[in-house]
Image: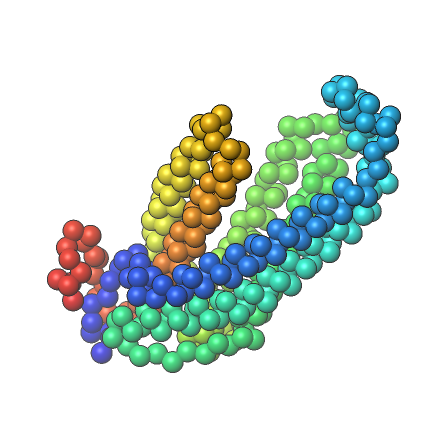
Length: 322
């Protein structure tokens, strides 16, 4: 039985699952890059549409060439004075479209990848597990994740207005007091929203593993965070360190082509930097899959608390641990 079998550490188990199921890694890359590509196309469309609507007269062109900050600021205000409504409409169209696109793609992808990861984690520990897509619960989870983002944006604006009203009541601007009030209030809101988003990140595990409803999945995620907070924090810190190392390494490689800017065509340098960015994102997606599989392993250990957990020494061959 699984409860009598030794289990690997969540960190090691995550990478073991990643090696055994590379298709999940490819699926994670596919859906994130599809979303990113569509989002980029929408942003480019909105930007070009906005710029096309701005008319620059010859007089304004002459004034912009002056490079005088005060004159440039005046010209820009004049050109944009009648375009804020268009900018707001374009912003609403893009943000609402991306919100619906995220809910659809994330629901399909997370329900599929979570199922595979849950089954694979159980299989590597000698357990067979039946899972369900549970699209309704996963869709609700993704809806509330997007809702949290909208709440955060609204809170940002509202807190800025409140902080400005509180610190500017005497008709004078107090930048230091404004920043203090704004950072304190928004820091509290950001902490609450981040914790709720964390619960929604874990919730699909229980939605597909236990066929739980939205409310039960979030409650199970909260209980796991409460009971195994140390294990989850340790796993996050380990992956954070890996992500930082990978980021620093790829940053060095990404800026290396700039040293050849005078001897290599700029197009090749641009393509090299884009390729480096894509490689970084691909590996980062793989690290996310390994981390998520680690979350599932922690949830499995909570389900079978009597199972012995064994840490994997990287210097010991894997066959010796089986």
